[in-house]
Image (cartoon, rainbow, N blue to C red; front, side):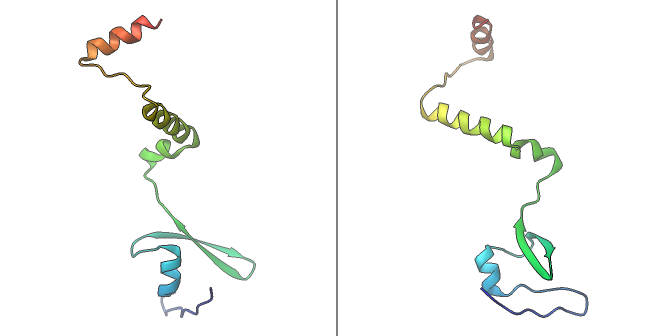
Length: 93
């Protein structure tokens, strides 16, 4: 897909609507711009708060997938009280 955009006096570049639609970009979202040779490569990016970065680590996401599989397979147990949960955990030692 090719489009032409005009650079403003302040150095701003407006992405054409067709490009925004193709990249599923909306106002206020972030993009990464990388210079490759004499070309500008624009890639949509999500900005993650530093205190939430652990959640998006490969290890955490693998554990989330494993937990989802366990839940779907019924490998869960419900407890009415915290004491029941603690008793169950201590019985596994």
